[in-house]
Image (cartoon, rainbow, N blue to C red; front, side, top):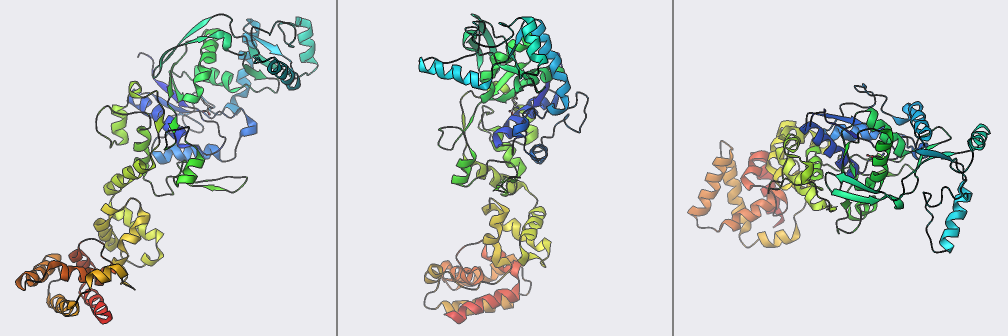
Length: 505
Ligand code: GLU
């Protein structure tokens, strides 16, 4: 590769970015970084009807949260700017004009009612209406290929609405190349003459996209599979302009957990997982959609699971930091087949990354989310977190796993009580209180030596002591090591909790 690699992520700001869009951005980022290239963000906002307030900001925040910021884009390093197509409006008309002048595109004046009528008539005859070589010059359609130059100009001067259509070739076979899909051949007779430009002065997606990729010196177009049907037209446009086309890679769809059909927001709502990186409030309806960040996912976990939606390293390794992904990523290892989304796997990744976080950081977050922890020393909370995080997937699991480090049990689990409280338990627990009180240096080791020593010396079953002891401390038969709990809550609180249980027997 001689030219500097330049890729772009080109979302339309029509709402929150779906995780499929984030995956596309991630693969662009990985490819760019791997080849020491540039990752460009371009906002494709030519369709003003679909513009949604706040969407661009959301896109930028999402990329930043994932740790995959763009090198160039709106407001940043604007050497090929502007990067919003609405601000590049003045650029596109000359390219449409150029194609018309060269006979590669033409004006069409057909109204939508007229086109509808053609469509209906074709349907009635069992045919499909395609605006292209087989009818564009037959005189039934109103365009500059049938009208004289003067008639065409008169219509434009009169302010008639028009579109500029691309004149797609007849009887040719296009040979296309996709890095992921290999060779594709397309019969040009099935292509319709796509609209490139409208008389309101706005280009369509196709023209703006090609012109901008060219002007921004994009070398590789990496985008979702839904754009594969546009590839033929895009290649024809590059050829028509005499420009060198970039290389293309169309990423596989992300499928529902069942593997059937494209993953949608509805699947997430139904099965209880987010499909957006960040929470989003619809500016019109105020409806809130959940996001991975707010649901307690770590950005590293999201990046890791997204990388595996369509790509794999070809080894058993599943845990990849962003840096490792940059070094191992290869478009040649991206699958053609759709990638099934697995919500359990996303949790598995989060659990893994939870273990990598600093206890103090987790503790700070835990404290911020729990009013009951407001006045507790964050270093104590960090020690608790260290004891329980192995069982947690989210910070929101912490309270359930650790409340007994902060407050004494208010009741005892019924089943657990049945199992733990037997004849003689009160005597045993009274003895344990004595042992607790007589342990001068209240450390885990000393507690273990004293209590376990007493159990073995007197040949009492371990369960007979440890079960009621745990019940007294936790209120249930769960939680981390009993000696760790005693040490953490301290001598007085330990004795108090055991006494409280004895009183209920
Ligand atoms: N604006 C298109 C989108 O919303 C870009 C497609 C492309 O990357 O060419 O996905």
